[in-house]
Length: 493
Image 1 (spheres, rainbow, N blue to C red):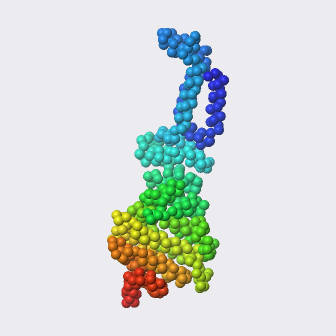
Image 2 (image 1 turned 30 degrees about the horizontal axis):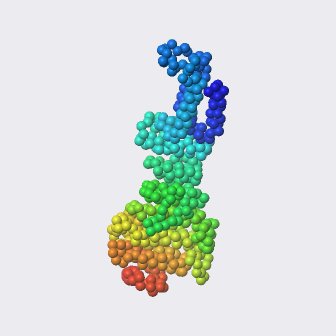
């Protein structure tokens, strides 16, 4: 390699550095020590070889040794220019290897902290994500004491965690634009993760343009064994493919609380007016952009996953009575007193129907659960709480929701009958004999009690609706009829 070639090579390196993305340049700067060391050593060696004829010392050793060391003269084994070219290739290869390394060591964390802080101050969130995302495990390991590091390195790791997990504007960016980073950060085993996950899920639930809405829309597959959560549905796959993640993070709370807060603010506003409109096209596309429906659907996906995977926790499906109460508080049916034969008179009615549909699905899932499922074990057929049993928890919640609907003056008699019939058919679908018959007894008891708190103010409405049901359905519900008669007699006493 000639001097001109060396100058060309250096110019090419400088040009490539200038053309590299800012994030890549900053990643290179994190390895400044290695970069500078390689550059100094190989640069000096190449320069020496290029000027070998000027300052090369005379070889004073034996002939055989000099034959290897001497690079010029009559018959050198390799010329100085050739040696310089080989060194340049080795230099370039080592630099590329250094650039391709994604992981840093604990010693790099102070420099990474300084870089991340600068990027955050400038709100360059995309570059911040590229620089820090490959090193999240290292940061968590050092901060948690799992990776050996100095006190200064531990302090840098802790500061990086606070910076990445608690900065609201960066959290919003990650939630909306970088789902893969968000789930990787939520997967970290650290106390700092819980507040972060809460904020991520709340941002997603409050924005109908968020990836969560898209994923819920895309995840409409269902089998006897439950829903499948493909990899491209990043959030749902992370939370529900192994529903222990959703349980660990309490994924229900931010999503359901956001929905309840949204409904609480809707009284007298445009959303209440929207809910009171016709549901003609709501089932097709509109519902997938409705915050309340997506929250219900999210709960359905989560509870069903936990049920199928044998997780012994109700996953707070008890949000369903609270949602029902909030929706009934906003319920307005302009055609209540008219002869309307729409299946769902309003969008609000469709949302309530969706709640009932989810609850009955969770209950009827006992028909398909394997015999060793912990959710098939009932401690009692009375309508009392068994928090580790999802079907029974759904039974109790369904009784509460039905009572609320039956007592609501805003809901038309026709729609009350429609929802009650959903419950009647759910009872009829459950076995009357065998090991799983206890769920039928529990559901009958819950419907009559109105949930976990025994009440009788809805029994008259229940009797009126039941008496108008088709005789074939009534014949399948003889046990319910007898229990209802006994409850009415007991209420009169």
